[in-house]
Amino acid sequence: MKSLIQTIIALVFTCFTGVASAQELPKTHLTVVGTWSNLSQYKNFEQPFWEQEVTEKSGGAITAEIKGFNEMGLKGGEIGRLMKQGVLDFGSTVLGYLASDNPRNEAIDLAGLSPDIATARRVSNAYRPVLAKLYKDKYNVKLLGIWPYSAQVLYCKSPISGLTDLEGKKVRTANRTLAEFVEAFGGVGVTLSFGEVVQAMQTGVVDCAITGALSGYSSKWYEVSHYLYALPVGWSQVVHGVSYDAWNDLDDRVKAFLEQEIASLEDRIWSEAGKESEQGIACNTGEGRCDYGQSADMTLVEVSRDDKVELARVLDEVVLKKWAERCGEACAAEFNDTVGKVISARIRR
Image (cartoon, rainbow, N blue to C red):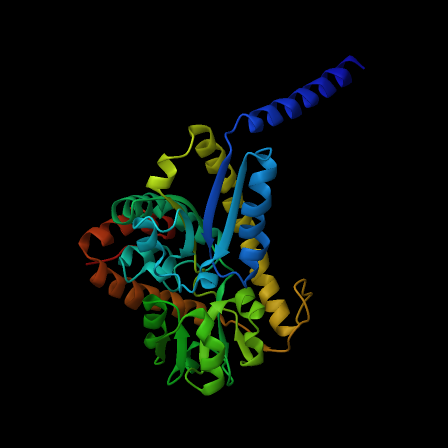
């Protein structure tokens, strides 16, 4: 009985100290730019985190408003520059969208680099200090989080049985490394923003397109494509940061609170990404339970062992070499010392 009473007192004390701690935070209002507002990551994680969770957990001290960059008429590649100019405070974008600013932004999501979600996270963690320094120096931005979308897979209008069938096909890619991957198999990489893909598929501008398994389902790509080849060629990681000017204006207690909560958000998104990949396949094909709506009836193309071997070969012989050529010696050395040690790979110059 004494032990039970002590436990209850401890729990009550914890609750009250947690509330007191939250009430000590100064009133703060934040403006945030999120990723694609029509996709599940924004709806299930980003939006509720900023509009509900931070307010509840801070005892009402911190409030925030968020809009996806697409709602602001942006394509995502402008986020870093707008944060540097002081136009945006907190912001997220797809890492690959920043590749034209600096090739280092491609390093953790090079085509074929991470065949599974666990590897993708280890790779992201290893390279994080490099990205943190890059964003501080280039954009005056503090890196707060890195998290993935669901596995990046192939949606095609015409039958496809494997990677060799990409020969001669025009394939939508979101970044240069995916274009190089497609070209290594004889296809033509076509760079299009996510929002342009449905029309491009309808009009024949592209034959296939690469995106997240669940992202494509959420945007009804199954209406313009019929074959899903579920070999993960990437994870389309998102980076989240804050302008140092805005960050330095915050109370230290608010900073500590936000860093802790964003780290928790990051963990949750990573843990769900594998499940979302499975859901994307189930929802697009009807093979398995779909928790996001009515299942479509795309044909699921099984991934062959030979294609997994080919993906690794193209990564080593084409993707890594081309990336190192445009990024330079320092990039290659950073990669070898970080990501390379995680995946037991080395860029040979």
